[in-house]
Length: 566
Image (cartoon, rainbow, N blue to C red; front, side, top):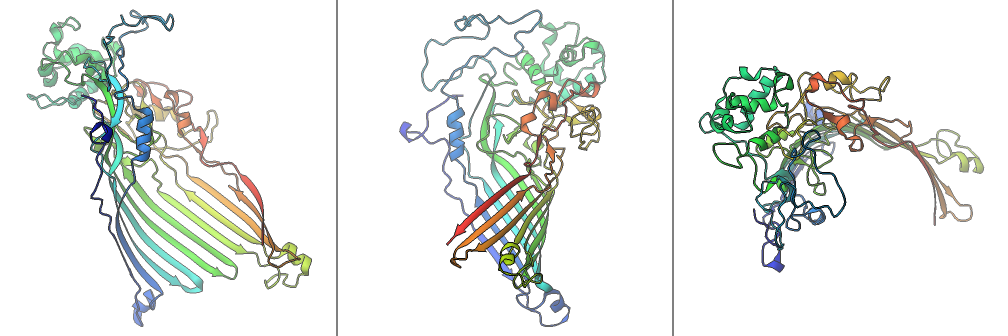
């Protein structure tokens, strides 16, 4: 891959082409029935009493500015040329790495280091199989497009009530998402028609059963793609090609090396194939994350609301939403270059992007909102104490109480990931895979800190490590729901020297009940809290596994205000 200059100053195209065909039509329809008699009149009423509405729109997202800023701040492509020593070159036992002796230490003699004679801009990465990790932009970026629609029915009821039911939908296509354009190949054997994912899955099943190495029967994939393994000095000549590959991942109890880092196994085998070199890896990069417009999302919701028009000093409304949002990434254009959490929007396996499709990071199933405004009926012209004297009216009359209530079910919790290996992507680890039913059942604590699970050990042992090609479970668990009640009390005092001069007093309380619902968050994201070690079904979780680390809202806050108007 060659890095080239871009932009008009270099007589080149831009980082990506402009879109000139963003057609954005809107369509809407409203109809108010006018039935004069019969059951239709009782159901829909006369004209103006009920209304049907519908609409459809095609819109586009505005992208580019923040994407360009992020790329400008973080991009190293063409500006740096690095040489890395491959992972697992050294170890802590028989082949330790050289000790650091100072900033002027000579590193040119280390394996994998080749210093170029001169540097020219833009810099090019050599095809030296150093498994570099960088990121860039896709020059085929397109403007993300959204298709939105809704239908609703509203009905005016007696006593100033209005009832409305709606269905809302949105399908978004060509959304910004990240993918690794140098993803490791899922090599297919042309003879057996097996691919790497399937063949390694067969060996992984044998590993789980502790199958002895010599009992493993030949698998055509390994026999055809790696026929020369027994004759290689790094492998056992008494074993078949299949058994030699199995020995790499088999547990130590059966004589294996217990290497569950399956992309590293690909690196080991990359130059041993009878079909040639670099069958899995690109010679320049191990991973090259790229912002592309390949994402998709779908949102559907039903809403029901009832509201009371202002009557006798009272105004209120209540609504309920039942919704579901699905996507293959929930990313922002200002997020980091790599990652599968914190909004990075990284599609782990670009060869099977649908594997990432699940509940959106912001998916909420149930939402209830309510609001009210009440003129407290005390004072002049009110039902209670209407004959108050001037001082009493100034103190007790004219108060207004407002309130806002919200409750919603939980957002998806952070994902538990395979901390033992990189099964699919060279730089980003896959999620864990549940082997038996398990749901989040938050606890308040006890012997442990508050946790996402009532039995963390059972939850931990309900996972397995990811297999080759797997993205695994995305957003399978939920944080606790959220609840909040805000109240406000206010009154306007008319100044005795001028009726146009008023002093308004406000007292507002946010989270009146000081309710604290806990959650998992990026602040506590670590290998101990969310990582799965080798064979978690046989292990013990860390003390912090699945623990909550923050609150969802804020503590109770009161604020007071005075406003003088004239």
